[in-house]
Image (cartoon, rainbow, N blue to C red; front, side, top):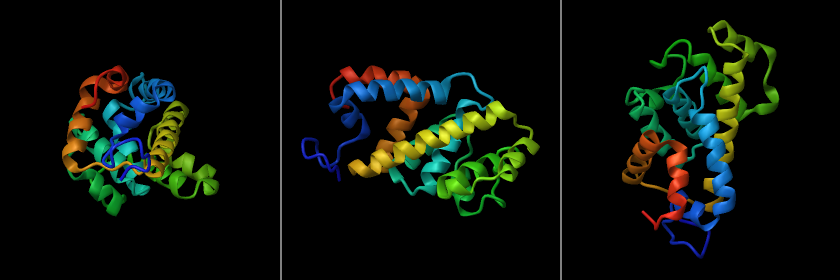
Length: 184
């Protein structure tokens, strides 16, 4: 239920973005940079990180949308559920497990990060650029989770599917283009 009285009680994030287009445009530009620009991580891996962080935060809206997006990029269905239940025994690729462990810890207890946490990521074959990119995705989705939860934005599975497919097909730049269009 949206906490913004000028929007419908079932408002979507796109409706919030349309109501506040100036910050939304800048935010979506940043999303496009973090989530789709060249990176050590493919778009699907970054969506996996986003969905994982959102799951750790129990942000149903972002977790739902970005799980669908990650799956549209080839992440196997059910992988996120398994990763959130028990990352160590999940079918997540071994190289990604330390990355997800890192962003999970950064989300839960940011002041407790250590050299050993970063070393685990490096030992899995990732470099400093990859660690930086993972931290940016983590930070962005911790921000988004708080924005969505703070504004009371919710979505059902049908909307998550529509939004996730839209993000896979058009990216965040495509979402920014929708700021001027009537509600969908």
